[in-house]
Image (cartoon, rainbow, N blue to C red):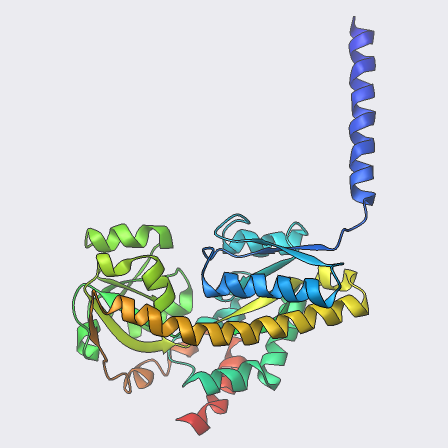
Length: 331
């Protein structure tokens, strides 16, 4: 009986091993898996799908993109980890990259960028190329193109008209060191919290406010639990279409050209869609909220020295200073 069992076990082991070998040897079918934690229907996901449409067109149908949105590919961290492990080819991400290279906190550093022109000068110029090259070296992730988002603004349970109104404000922020330090310097009480918990926390007054682009505010229906909308534009938003360097190297020169062209086309589509959607989303939000436009001109001075808390982070300060210098013409 034991011999029979052993024979069956060994046979099954051989079959399983053979199947694994065959699976590993199976040729790539031209499909790229692209993950996004954003909900289906958001501009970022629509832009990812436009990337897929363009890639299929440029490649004559030999390449396609499987867009896994709304968490189907995992949360942002899991998506990037998947790119590093080889289970995910592409992503639409931004600030989460600092979890893999702390210098990338520069991507969502409050009050750093003056306006959209400053953003484009940095990310489409030499500074951006230096950051992209570093990302390949430190994370194995390659940036293909930048997708503009609307700036981050605040939704709160009390009006924000001046810097004094920030004092003691329990403001939900992502658990990122620079963002916690910057809001603390402004006098707020930054409160790290997972995004899915924010709606209930506002509803129960566990927190006094949160900050996000208008699209996130509307899609999350924060206007139902926060009466005030403060247009602060404290972070000019952007995301990146990225590809795992291991995937990129697997492509032929022709396939890389198609991928790069499709990513550039998706960025053009995204930036036009953002402007169109922003107006509609603001119109929806202000039906439910009281809007304020606080003077933030002094906020930058209050946070001018916060970067010194991160002198130990390799690469960060050099990028910070370069971006500040690049912005002088916009001040």
